[in-house]
Length: 303
Length: 106
Image (cartoon, rainbow over all chains, first blue to last red; front, side, top):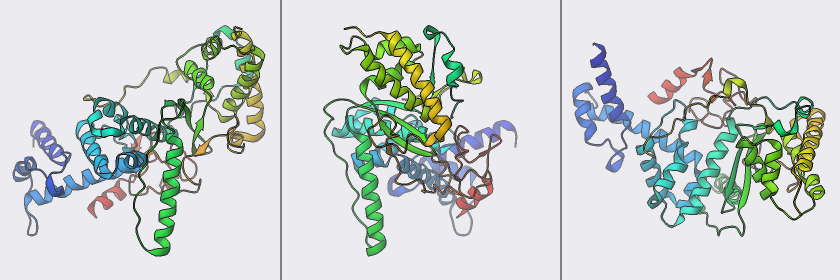
């Protein structure tokens, strides 16, 4: 087999295997011709049935993985709507990485581009998707070297820049989705416990919420291998966001408090405590020289 | 009254120095042990308990959860996956290929 034949063979099989399933969770008709051309039948299975096994396991694996990562979103949308969204997203964006961890990386952009898939749950669903993707990042994104406080303090204040750890995500949200996810987890644990004792299944919890009275500011991070959702005061959120955007420490402080009519010494006491905590958490870091070039995202070209 | 960003930045530096001292004394656990709501509280735990195994062996369930319990690269409980793009990796190549193939055959 020459290279062009091999390439055509691979493309045809990949296309058939990675195509969404049709009615009854069977392979779509488009795959039948590929099966007839490339797959031999055996005594028990026709060619299309043999290829269908691969098509099904691929899709069920993706859907299962997606459902694991976005359980909160499923509880907001309901099972049917979530399944429709999952299929539409995976059909459009697919799995662009060898690592299933990256499967949901384009979801936030996708649902902004396709609000019709969220029905009346749009704003809550968008917040939930953002938080659940941040949780994935917090679990295993890189940790850069933490700053050396003594060395850092020796720099000129107007030139001091701080990096934030790649595993740390900052979110400004309309809904208290951190609390909703906690409620969902408790409900799932209780249901699992009841199922073990009674042997019966239980209905899945649906999540509903009203928007919070004021924006919810969250830092999603990890400490000692555990992922946390930490609420931030608005000024703390803006300060961290300015640092992440590359502002100097002085400018970030100025941007976070603006013209706030509170004495600087009162603010200073608060800021000292925040930075003390952020340093202890390990959030503040130096960007390694090797990482100054941003890697190309694996984003879906369609969304 | 306008705030003085230089005073605030100085307070931030003092905080960094103080946080570095706390880190040196108690390691990385300072945050999680503080009461909820304080600056030193790590926040709400995403999973119920730290003991959740994320047992991904043979399931490719590493995705974002790390902790390849029993895996060849021994990352269970060490979170050595973090920053390396998932625990099914070793020397830049996926591991457990044979186990995954077995699973797929089933």
